[in-house]
Image (cartoon, rainbow, N blue to C red; front, top):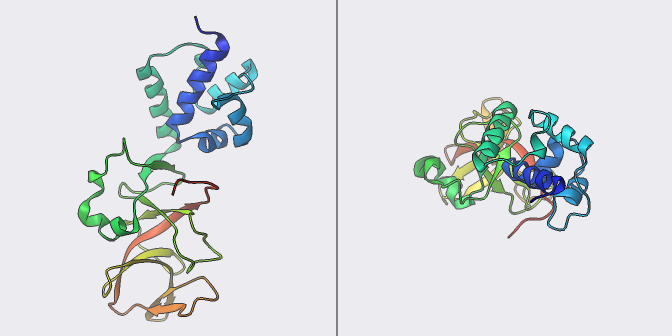
Length: 222
């Protein structure tokens, strides 16, 4: 028979996994990831006490005592679905820069979200939103390599937005800031030392997505 501490930890881990991992879980309950790791990690060193259990339940809008009871997988899934709906979280896949160039053509529906690396988008987004990991240094200091950018192809960009553009001549995708100057539009590299910081838009490219959020994971699998 499981102890109350084992039941609480098992339920809390399922809630954690349902919102995208420890960092998101910690943010939702207003605690530091290092603190939640102590009672949720594989080698947990602390138990979830009654005060913390009730706090987690309130943060997930669950009834008092929910964390103390064993639940069928479907019941935990239902709790996750309610939480995701109330927080407006949408799971978004990580794709490659090559895939981004043909994203609207290949169709986001072809991505199997059950096996794709994905994360919940912290801001409202469209169904075709995807994640890219920043490569290169053209947008330093604004963005670092490895940083995740959430890109929504359905958001119409305006002056000052950071965008993903498909270069017509090379077929490559590029990440720059959209700058409008009168009737002219440019793609601007934010790196002050970039050799050609401005590229005038004159039919040489197509903007295929607008960055709506960015995050800075400290570690990720390459």
